[in-house]
Amino acid sequence: MYQNFEEIKRDCLNCQMCRLYEGRHNVVFGVGNPQAQVMFIGEGPGEQEDLKGEPFVGKAGQLLDKMLYAVDLDRHKNIYITNIVKCRPPHNRDPLEDEQDACIRYLRAQTKMIRPKIIIALGRIAGMKLIKPDLRITREHGVWIYTKGIWMMPMFHPAAILRNPNQMEEAFQDFQSLRNKIKEVCPQVYVNEE
Image (cartoon, rainbow, N blue to C red; front, side, top):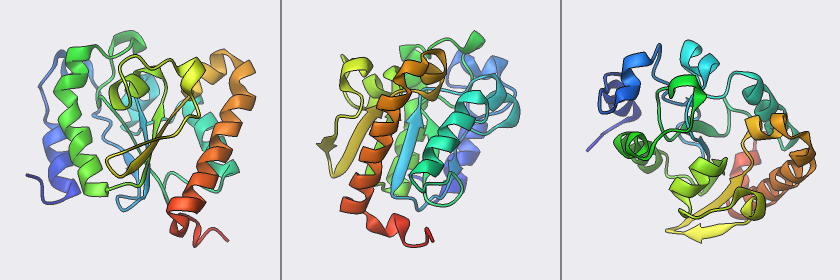
């Protein structure tokens, strides 16, 4: 098993376990504090993420950063952000089940190394893979589930909010719920917020 984050990343950067590696520019491993107690997990990188090698850097990432900032979270300071698949699916399509299965070992290793107390599944695909296969994001976003010592919640994917701005208010309420849960289960996340 892996001894540190660098070993996981090295294996991931050289991965050829599924066909997604054929079209990638960069493996999008993750960004943030590897000791974070809060993890955000999306489905997979888009075009901008593939070019830059960092998750959530396009327009959806800019919206995510604004929402994080509103609840005193920062991708470089007190959270960790990654995806289920680390290579961009062609034309930003949903990652297929076999692609998710090929890549999930890296996510499991990251999660085991970080040992978060809270995981946020960003979007339907992440929610279905991490929480339950029949998850309905429009009905179940913002609902907390406690499993194996981790609090989990699905949220709308920022790209979905950009496509449907009517979801912004509900998404903001979910972020408020996240802030409250952090204060309840891991308040040290906010120790250096001032």
